[in-house]
Every structure is written in C-alpha cells, then in structure tokens.
Length: 135
Image: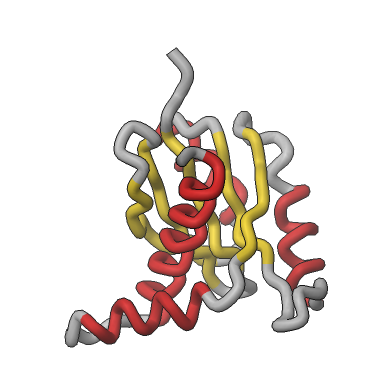
C-alpha cells in the first residue's frame, strides 16, 4: 500500500519549519523545526524515512505581486539538495503563512517562539496543499 504521509517544509535560512499530515484524515499538524546547521538534508531524509512519507511539500515564497524573490531562489536551490531523498517534491505557495501562523499562536494566549511560528507556517502550507489537491 502506498504511503499516505506528507511532510511539509517552510524553508528558512536559520530554521526549517516541519509539518506532517496523514491523507487518511487530511489534517496538517505542526511537527518540529530543523536547524540549518549543515545536517538539515540528513535530518529531512531521516524524517521522511521515519514517517514513511512519499511526498515533501515545500513552501514557495513570492512577493505581494506574485513574483519570485531572492528567498524563492534560495528555496529552489535548497529543494535541489533533496534529490537523493526517496520522496516526490512539490511546491505550494506560502504567501502570508508566517503572518497567519503567528496570529494563530497569539490567539492561544500562551508564549511561543520563532520555531513555533515556523512549524505552524509549515502546517498552513501543507493544509493548503491538501485542500488544493485532495478535496
């Protein structure tokens, strides 16, 4: 049986937000953050294997006019480094996901960290992807 697990990455230059979803329930859940420290590709590979994921959805940044930015190029180059990981890679627009993530966390009324925002943003990216491709 094919895997029903999808992993999402919100790629930044310091941290990578990670979310996971099981297509059986179609709900993306913030998972963790991975530090960009030279081991991030290995850590993502280990996560894919551990979760049995068949797909990695990467947030695709653009400016407000919908155009590519310097961060878009960074994310595209980062995605190329994942070629040896046995999972399909797709991009999903990530416009305003960090803003939405921070608003969601603030609404809980508890303290949160930048890494919480990154993981929550990855969950929003993944939920958007699921709703676009699996509904």
